[in-house]
Structure formats: C-alpha cells, structure tokens
Length: 153
Image (cartoon, one colour):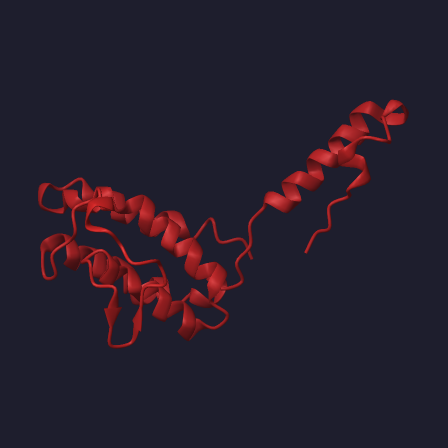
C-alpha cells in the first residue's frame, strides 16, 4: 500500500494552520514533521510502536527529548545548532499540532502506514525497461545498468 495519498491531508492541515499569526511558528517545523513521519513509517513494525514514535514529535518541538513513555533517538542537540524556535507547551501552535498529530480519524489508518513503501524501486525498474525498449536490439548489453538488474521487494 502506497502511503503518499494519506500524508498530504495532515500536512496540508498543518500548513493551513501555520498561516495564522499565532501559529506561524509551525511553518518552521513542517519539513521536520514530514521527515519524522517517514522515519516512523520506516522504523515501526507495529501500530503501537508507530504511535509511540509518532507522538514523540510533540515532545521534540518543545525541546523535550526524554519523557515518561520514550525519548528522541537523535544525538544530543547543541543549543547553537537549533535554528528553529521551540514551540511552547500549551501555546495555540502546540495545541493545533497536538490536534493534528493525535487525530483519531487519521490514526485509525495507522496500520496502512507501517507497511512503508516508496515507488523509487518501481520507477527505476520502469526506466530500465524503457531504455531497453527504446534501444531495442541495438542496446549495449555491457553497460553498468544492464549488468546490475534491480531486485524488486
């Protein structure tokens, strides 16, 4: 199951929320939240594991890297390396982010997310076939891309 069609709805909600004056701090975090989503999809093998990892973003954006049910898996952060403003707990921006991340309707489909899939392998395979089809019998069969066929999962 490809998960691209499920992600944009939540990200779009996040971007829409970030347009408001009191939520503008969220715009700094959108890309990192998307990256965290993909990280959770890759790492999680169960629904509960996904939820624990996914909920961690609510702590990380507040500069809280250890909490009662988990911790961030990144290296310790240097104060000078942080270029984004931290989100204050209880602020309007944090409440909006919490509502998006903990959305029950969205989390109901979490089992679809943990079967993490991308189309990169398929696209590479299709390009390989296209090159062979275009060149036909004149295709150079000693090229690197021909000698290393792509194994699809």
